[in-house]
Image (cartoon, rainbow, N blue to C red; front, side, top):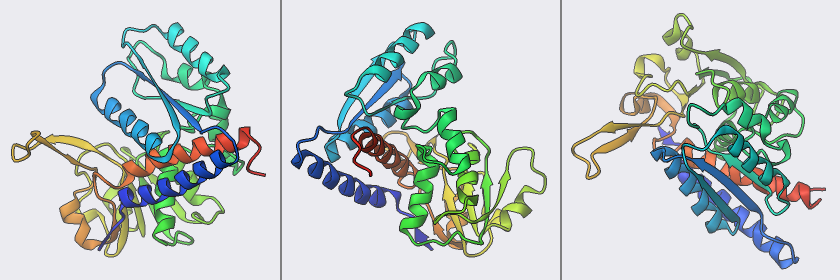
Length: 295
């Protein structure tokens, strides 16, 4: 068993991006600029956004964090999004999810300029992705594919099972893996909470991607010998043996599944860092497109 180390892979890609920034600056160009809107005080969201800000600092991006009170009304948030759409200094931005219940996330997603939608959630980017046209790819699915690529894990002709059908991870990663591309050409089954004979289907997978949102859901009986296992889930559970009183686990029972796997992502340190670096790569793509540097 080998770990798919997202943390070290992410740092390697960040170094590549940092060298690109140095090259841009040497030519008299400005720094790429990523902005983030954080609404409310959600703990995991704050942690995630702070990690994005630190990554920007590490590679030389300019970053702007806009913190808004949880009581902000929808119209005011949409106005703030429109101001970022029009701000020529901002290459890309995200609105951190989840949002307070009184705000319609669909309206927020639709309000973001697709050319600055570095999360890859706007229907225009999703549609272009589906058709194989240029698009900002969703950060987590793209991070998963990049991790497989960096570890030289073949996908062509492989049986891949994606467990979970969310619009953020499960559905887009199933599309990307089935596309005619370098990291693609897999035969993909998209399984979910209503799938019958779930364990049997999972056992068929050469590559099993788990994004079902249930802690330690996948056990050894659901994985065949030698499978590649990618765990997208992250959950905080109580653990009195830890100084902070908790530990993080994924959707996969790591201790059971790891011995049967050829490769497996740890939690934390697997998919999460790859999501952040994919966001940075999308920001660089937006920057280069705006400055006509990718032609």
